[in-house]
Length: 476
View 1 (cartoon, helix red, strand yellow):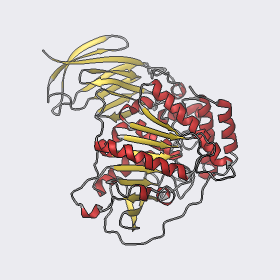
View 2 (cartoon, rainbow, N blue to C red):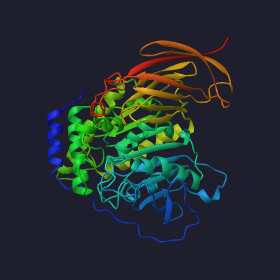
View 3 (spheres, one colour):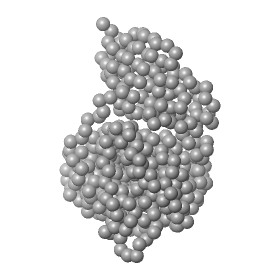
């Protein structure tokens, strides 16, 4: 492991006394739009601005946020002339104190994508250029900023809304996600929590570890709390909750803690040391140097965690460089090359599904797990899941619904080796070939306060609960 703990904490301390908001320029062009954007999936369209033949700014509102935000969209050249064509989508996020227009104004996104058959969608990830929401549904929904349910907005609303309004390839094979700095955390937390949505993910000087390494976690906590307090003007623990009582929520959104979920995502990490590089004019600027050093540590720790879990990740550690736009613009240009190759020949979904989450109910790769348990947030995992069976870890009573893996109404033998006994019974698939199983796990007598703060081991086994091994085979 590559930890430089003293330097890391020193860099974080220096950063917290600096103001890290960057002035940005609003788009001013006005034109009528030949493309109609309509309401749907919780999104209400307030205004559509056609900036040029490729570029649109759509002002939207959603109850998930409680305030209006922008979604900047870049279409492929000739989009309107090819009515039968469908295109992959790159969701591209700005960083702290950024806006939806950042990648166009500062990152060369319009030029970089000009020749590509690619739709680029750049949603706001904060309100009016404030510090940003850190890509999570906020713990405190009663601040002056409103509900701030950013994950719900981006994942559950923007993605299906884009698919409904534009000619997209509306499935995993046609969808990627990337971002810079705080947006690099966003691209990795979303792909770790929703790996079946994205075929590729990229982090440019991002923060893909906010919890796993304790020294990085201390710095990340300080930076996130400073973002809330000084840039968003809300209480410091508004986003993820206090570490003392809500550590499990931080773990459940930390890409490094969830790295094994990303086995089916082609993941790219771009990072630099923080020392001045080829795009840094003299004299040295300590602010972008310190920020890049911090994100470098976070990136390397995520990479190490992925390696430990056997998850292939592409690391582009390009040495000297700081936390500035010329490097991110270059990162985007370089990433677009393997991204378009991945879109052209997308990898198949994992043959056996493995996923872990703190959510009470979740669905991935066609599998759904719902838990009746005491704690609202607590790790569960489904591993090596195929038509022949799976291993389930967690607490309480679990209901598992499989994908359509069996013949309609097929009779199957199910063996459950649980924490107390092994039971075998005959169960029938439903008319669509799904199998629904109820599995008692026990281990649900842990007080809620303990469950929230319990630490998950390196093997991914919760510090409470139990394991059930399930085998499934046809009746003979």
